[in-house]
Length: 513
Ligand SMILES: CC(C)(COP(=O)(O)OP(=O)(O)OC[C@H]1O[C@@H](n2cnc3c(N)ncnc32)[C@H](O)[C@@H]1OP(=O)(O)O)[C@@H](O)C(=O)NCCC(=O)NCCS
Image 1 (cartoon, rainbow, N blue to C red):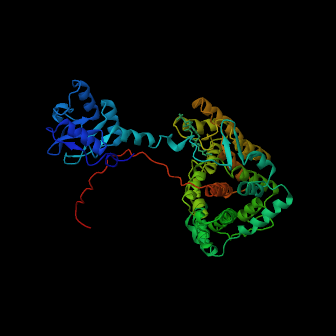
Image 2 (spheres, protein in one colour; image 1 turned 45 degrees about the horizontal axis):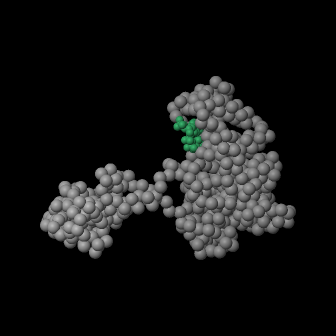
Image 3 (cartoon, protein in one colour; image 1 turned 120 degrees about the vertical axis):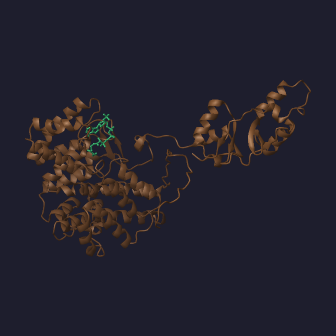
């Protein structure tokens, strides 16, 4: 909300107590105001409003004029005044409570500086920003055709195709094409055309190669990815989205999404003392990623499991990182800036950083004995202490997370002791949450089985969230392109709740400069 000084009429229309009422009426007309402040030496002693004038006229004998009435006879006195430092919402509340339509506004010295009317304040209050729930929960902030999450139904889709069906039936490149170009390939030739277009884009730019060891040595891969993608975007001259046509924006988005897995794998290998493995244009996305990461040819079952995981994580509604990408795009910044910002948002444990934590929980349970008693011993005190159990609960789903159901199937197919422990843990934790947090409908989210599946496929734990990022960059790309195509800068408001400004700048005490 604005300050009082921007809302009030200034200078105030004033009169002396001895002036005839007719002069005040003429002054109100001349200045188009509804009140005159009666002052002595610049300080308010009363106020005469249109309402006072009407009341006076109604009380006068028929045909009598107002010339004999003086301001002092008619004015409301004493007068309540406010100061320029008062908060408009508080002033509005006071005026409504006391039935005032006009209030003099005093400067710091107590002289009348202006007058604020109920209408001025009410108008600002009405058009002022509406209050929204904390965290914008449930607030619609954009129209999108990229996809949608239906929390109550336990369903989400990419451009009207169930994401889970896509994960079961299509390779990642088909879904990438769907997200960025708007349609799945409908023929093998269309699929090949897209694959042939994106395969060479996975190569590391030469300018980045000599810089990667330093990046890998100084940061974890997800943080390193931010640095590396910034370099790619700058080195390849990516221009503000606002200056590009759709083809230019698409080209930048494809390049960044294609090179992301290569960068991540290279950062990981350098960090662990190995040489990066270049992408093989003959391999599909998932096979390439696992090969570049591990340096060995993965079994097809692992490739397919990872690919299914990657397809399920391409996009998921207006989550924090997607919103971030759109906010940055809305400023007209380049695609690289939007993707890098989104990676920053994804890094937080409440968004993308939980799968390794969920697995750490399974470790703890295994070390405690691995049976139901161990699960209880590890989980119950945490819930009682108000902690959140990693891999459970979701901001949108109030039923099973469909990604978790698919990944549970994938995990079952892969098998192994960790999978068995995860299945038992899921069952028991859901029971404990139901007992200790009744009615919250807390089930496993995508992160719980994601960690289990990636672990079973040999993806190192430190690469869980980066692997999530490697496919989510496709969803961000689609959102960036959609935002840029029909842009409006995203610029919400905050309500200031600190001490009333302006506070004097305190003098510096003590010696030194
Ligand atoms: C994902 C998450 C942030 C969603 O949070 P949210 O929508 O704000 O959830 P809510 O605050 O509405 O939760 C409602 C209640 O369930 C509880 N709750 C939610 N997730 C919980 C969890 N994982 N473990 C224990 N309690 C949980 C909350 O404490 C809250 O309890 P209260 O009503 O007594 O205050 C939250 O479930 C969480 O922190 N999960 C663990 C982290 C995780 O797995 N992240 C990956 C998400 S894909």
